[in-house]
Length: 130
Ligand SMILES: [Zn+2]
Image 1 (tube, rainbow, N blue to C red):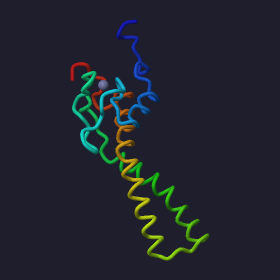
Image 2: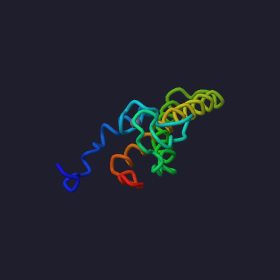
Image 3: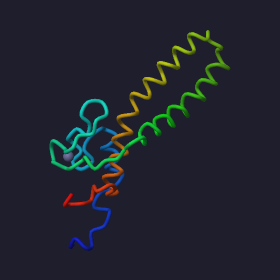
Image 4: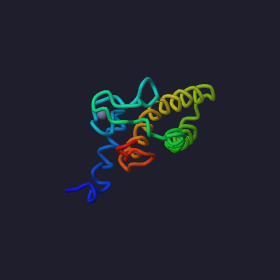
């Protein structure tokens, strides 16, 4: 196979998304994708894949709000109508739940967004020269 017949499928999307969810490099799946909580590394420590092309921007935050909102809003309604807890107890449980779930999802969804961009060769990920 020559370079001219090479298609987008040399980077399968679903395995890359799974590696991103585990916060690993979408190329090798072993090197850590993130430095600290949310900062994406410039290059993979293991396979030297360039990761600085990523443009996740507000995507992970948007997805986090979308998912947390769709889980917590119906749960709030069910808990309120079923048990009618004290307002302070209800607030405390759902504040901790929302913050905890958001902190869990945000870096994983950032890994997913970066992995999708890597797999689809967006933002210069496919350029061998750059
Ligand atoms: Zn790697």
